[in-house]
Every structure is written in structure tokens, then in C-alpha cells.
Length: 564
Ligand code: ADP
Ligand code: MG
Image 1 (cartoon, rainbow, N blue to C red):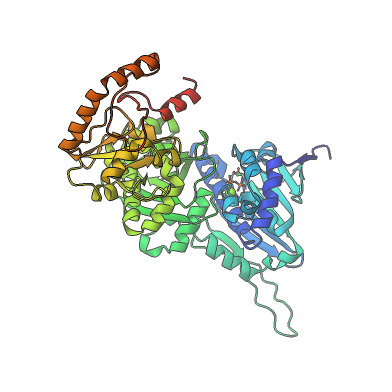
Image 2 (image 1 turned 90 degrees about the vertical axis):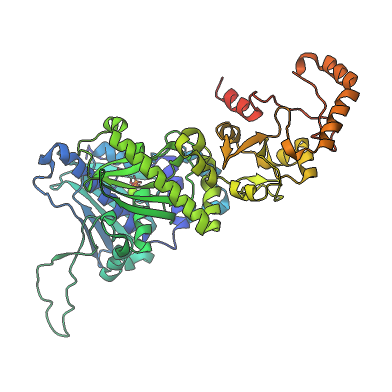
């Protein structure tokens, strides 16, 4: 037929398919969760479109998902009456990976990582997980409001075909032709138990045909019209009360909304009543996505208004430095017609953002207090992003500061484990400041001559070597009433930590070496601003210091990289 064409998968899809089949062979059942998750998204999208044009729902208003199987034909079929796809959408959605940077990331994966199901999860295993259990997948679909249906067929090797078909109903049917070793998925009991385990939280009914009783020996099989029954709870999870929801359900719901494969680290589920009414369910992922620093990384919450899905990636509800948080917010106050533009200006949204930000920070503080080990795991994944916080969120600076973790001279390791409260607890008698040093690497910081006097006096110094650290410290003025001092800057004033003898020695040395200092200044001429005698060194003869108000080396290189 003229409408039929054969197309190749994008290279990234081929690579991902390979990896997925290898890393997920021990969890083949995830295919069903993913396909039901997509069917549910398709229903959400249709409901949203119907807000503007209710005629879209007219002929078939009850949205649901149907799962069936055929033991003889060895197939499993998932059907939804959601938005469906047109030909171009089928080609784009089922032939490419939209996430930018995927190609480079896949190339950089090592052999060990390739076996890691968690890493695969970063892409959201999604539709392609069908090929874990099937050696041929047929998709038939028709987009709501359009005439032409489309059939997509692939064996998951390198190419797929698309052709036009007649399809009476809108929505999508996915037929999996099971691999010979996966044929026991064509079984009612098995499918039901997977749906209850992984898709119970889906707010649409997931239906299966009632099992027919097996006929007795010698009896004819009764000809009863098969009947569909709902297999899941079919209620929006965030609307249920916390006490009714198990951890497993919270975890599976996270996977549905985040498209992540791994369990979340922590979550917080709250209903707010009063002037503003909304429900939020916020999750901290356990792993940072590979594109955390990509400008077009997916961020933001899933927004519902009175349980109707409005949009993904509503980024107006949380600040940038919490962009890794996933979740749902369901408002009773916003209009169903709300758009991104309106969200940006709405003062209600601003108040919700303030409250949700506080929720997240409180959730992290609680975690840090109750489970230091898990908090450390969080810090290792997301600490760098949290460090953007003090610059972005003035009001919560102190709270964010208490969540920060640093390397320090207290422990001989580059691991960032020291909280400012720990540091304060170890301050010397008479110590008024929190001392830190910034450098390009941990070794450069730990071996800096600037630390000599601090070692001698037994004073702890924070060692800051991340790219954002200078930026961070330029926004951190004090913590718990103590100000921060960069020991690599200006004229080091140790205050009352310097005893009189130290002071006197310094003055005498300055006098004694007056001539030498003048000569060095002369030789270095324009290369330096000032030369002076110091008591900050015990072993090294000399060191370079940045002026109190000059830009540090890290900031310079960041600005240079940005072309300034
Ligand atoms: P994700 O769900 O993370 O976007 P998937 O690989 O699961 O990724 O699906 C890719 C895309 O294919 C979806 O974003 C959607 O546009 C489309 N899609 C998949 N299944 C369906 C469906 N049942 N109905 C409509 N569109 C679908
Ligand atoms: Mg999906």
C-alpha cells in the first residue's frame, strides 16, 4: 500500500533497546507498568483537551484502560481511549528519544554501568520496555478529532513500519507478541497481580475480562458474554489519606509521575486547607538525572486543578535550586484555564511556591536529623544544586545553610560530610569566625600554605572545591551569628585567636624585613598589588593572597567560560 513506509530507529533508540533488554531481563514485568502509565497519561491529555472542547469526549466519555490476553496467540493487549497519536506523532514518539544529551550519555557509559538497571531508569524505560517481553509489537492508534488511524509495527531490531488504517475508536491499542520465554505473561492471574502491584495508584480504572470458570469434565464450556471488571483501586493517590497508602504505593506512584525506574529517597504528602486549598505530594529522587545541569532538563511538578490534569513540568511552584524535586500539586483555587503565562503572574502561585519550598526544606532537615546516612546519599547526588540556594532564595538562606555539607581539615577526606553545626561545635575558645578556603581541587585546598597557621592553632577550616563554591560563599555572610572568612583573602585577622605575642612578633618581623619587602615589591612591580609580612605561614616562605574584595579564581574561570 502507498501509505506504508519503513523507517529506522534513531541510533539512541537502538542503543537503549539493547541496554534495556540486557539490564532489565530480571524485571520483565515492568513493561506493563510502563504501558499502563502511558495509557493513563494519554487519558490525562484528552481530559485536558476536552476542557476547551467538550465535544472531544462525547461519543466515548468514560476513560479507561483495558488489558487482555490470548493464550493461544500468545499476545497481551493494552487499549486506552485517550488522545491517541497521528502518523507524525507515532514516528516521533515511537522512533526517537526526545531527551537531549541522551546520545552522549549513552556513549560515556562503561561496561559495568551498562548492566545497571538504575541508570537505564534515567531515561524512563517507557514504551520501549515492550521489547523486554515481546519480539514483535503492533501499535494501532487514532488521534482524537482526526480521521486517519495509524498502524506501527516493529520487531525492535532496527526499524519499524507505519501505515494508515481505518480505526473506529480514538485512542491506542498495543499488541505484544510475546517472546517464547515470556509466554506466561498471557495469563489472567499473572497480569492481575502485576496491575495490582504496580498500577494500583493509576486514577483511571484498569479493566480486565472476568475469568470464566473452567467447565467440569465432559461439560460444554458455557457461552457467557465476557464482562469487564476493574482490577485496580482507580482513585487518584494523592486524594487518599496518608494512613491508607502504603510505602509501596507511594513508590510506584513516584515511578509513574517521574518516569524514573529507581525508588524515591523520601516523600512528603500534605493537604492544605484555609485561604488556599491544595494537596501536594513531593518526592526526593534517589539518583540525580544525567542532565541535571542541562538547561532543558525536565523540571517542575505535575499540576492538577480539582483532580484534572493541567500540565507537566509546571516549574513555577519551586525555585531552581530544588529543580530535582518531583511530584504533584493539585489546587482547588486555580482556574481550569490556567496557563504557564498566568501561573507566572498569579500571587496564589507565589504563596504556594513559598509554602512548597518550605515543605521541601523541612523534609530535608528532618531527613538530615533522623537518618544521617540517607541524607548523606542525598547530599552526594544533589548537594551541588542545593548550593545554588543561598544566592537564589534569600529568605531561606539560614535554613539552606544548615543543610549544606563540606569537606574540612577536621577529617582527612574529600567527602563532604561536615555540617556548619558540626563546625560550630568544634570552634576554639574565642573563635569568632567560620574559616574556609576555596581551591580548584581538594588536594590544592588541603595542602594550601594558607592553612599552616590554622593547623598550628588547631582551628578547623572548611575546604571548598566545587565550581559553585565561590558563588555560594559570596552569598553566605553568616551562620548562627558567626561570619565567614576566606583564609586565602586579604589581611588575615585572627582576632582574639592571635595572642599578644603573635601580634608583637608580626610587628617586629614587619619592621625587620621592611627593606626586603620593598625590594620584592620593586621586582614584582605591576604583578602584585601589595607585599607584606605575614604570620599565617609556618613552613612555606611565601604565598599569594587574593584581595579582600577581588574576584576569586573559580569565579574568574566561570565568567571566562561564559565569555565575559
Ligand atoms: P514518556 O512516557 O516518558 O514520555 P514513553 O517512552 O513511555 O516516554 O512514551 C513516549 C511517548 O509516546 C509519550 O510521551 C507519548 O507521547 C507517546 N505515547 C506512548 N504511549 C501512548 C499512548 N498509549 N497514547 C498516546 N501516546 C502515547
Ligand atoms: Mg511513559
